[in-house]
Length: 265
Image (tube, rainbow, N blue to C red; front, side, top):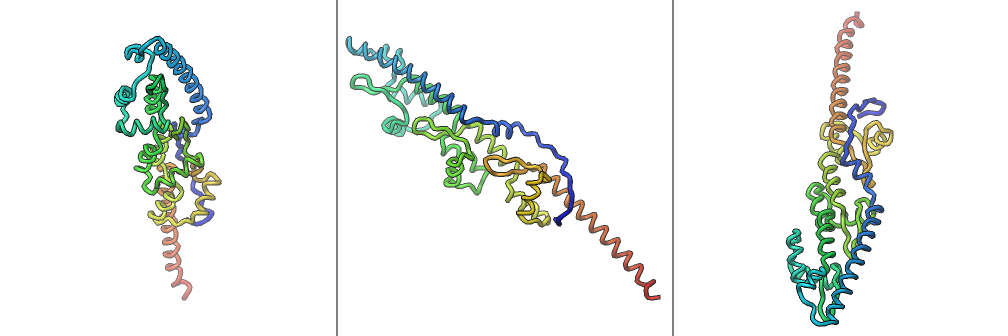
């Protein structure tokens, strides 16, 4: 792929998935989360106050307690299982003990508010845990290890949200990154693909073409990626140009051979 060769890439990639990822506003998401937590806290406070009053006037009846939205650990665990949570009761109790799942105390007993159970179910529908997110994306990025994944999260390349003691990754972000892994090449992958097609180019030369917009690309999470159809067009045109120049060279060689007898005369 010699310098000065001009190839115009005509493929225009309009990818709604990538656009949605780039427009993802984690700050607004965090602000919305704060509003949710504030409402949850108010609802829990009211339920605990009501339960405390009942306890002061006698025994807290289980029916009244559940009506106020206060569940024992066993009851809460069963509700969470209905929402698709797959961990064991022991793991659940451990999270409650470590306060990664909020609980309240009324009298001598500890309860999980219904608002917390509902919130955990909603979180599960919108977010992945760090481990879930890593397993999801590593299935498509084979070279990605957990340490590198955590590094991307810490740098903000992969958007995340802190909820209590948990670091969560929006599902829309991970699903978009999976889409990109399936439909785009990284710079390294693109160069490897070019070399496989016997199109020789150094990384810095290739990146200069990206900088100048001669090869369309998009920057996602600090990394440039090239749509597969864009690279396919580039490869096709490079091969066609190489064949054209080869034919031209062959014609020149033939003409040169034809002219040699005349020069001897």
